[in-house]
Length: 368
Image (cartoon, rainbow, N blue to C red; front, side):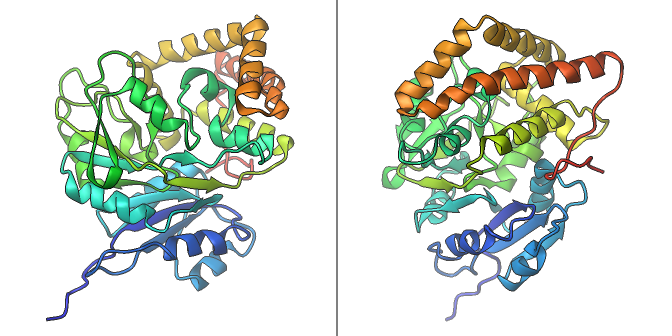
């Protein structure tokens, strides 16, 4: 008897804007993934932020399902893609990422099938190596100076696994995979599910949201898919696939990094009513620090200002990063930190005068 293939094995969501140069290799890395027997191939949902190049036409020619993202923001894109997914298993990749292991998504799907308590499975991190440019490695591992200071969870393959094992309860699972549970004794750890080929079970994530305990820290909203706080009294765990790196291809120009950092700061100050950015940023802070968000915002601002203006902490941190990563270019952490402080201060002044900056699209123009 023939097996009925009723639904895709999983859905892969791509948040895209002017991704023409990235798409062929990215889609190929998704199509080349091993798939389970008896299932259709992967569904690829590309959510486009109104690109001005051939992204949409190219995506359709590559067999992607294309959905419009009028707001032009990556967080909106992931919400839209998630809502459009026809599979319970949903994976997220950014346009400048590549899946390197041919069974990366299959291993994540098998782990979700094997463990009903697992709500998400993540990869081992980005490929970071001294032979690559310092700017590429900095963006891949840290993202920006605030993240480098606050979250201090390595985003690099080879560094993420031991860091998580030091902080969280863990055990071996099937085929060498690792499980981290949500019974966190003291510190909170922030893990992002919505990039790097991370895979979630929609039904299990939503189940946690539907049954919060009285003193639970709210999940970051399904929008950004940040998590790993004690969200509910229910037991759940996060899967981890060792030796499952993702290639990251950000810009290799520091000027572009400065521009992107400004874009991030602008969106973090966009607290428009009913804004996805609003709920995502505030949820991220609540999940990480478990406190009233406004107080957390002020505390972070003061902490970061002291970190930069005292000079010794930021200089020491930059030297430590450059020595441990064996790249002098990592010293750019210092001027980038000062830039973040100056831009943030300008936005705090705007907020003081009740002039809230609007969120920005991928290209820097105001979002709708």
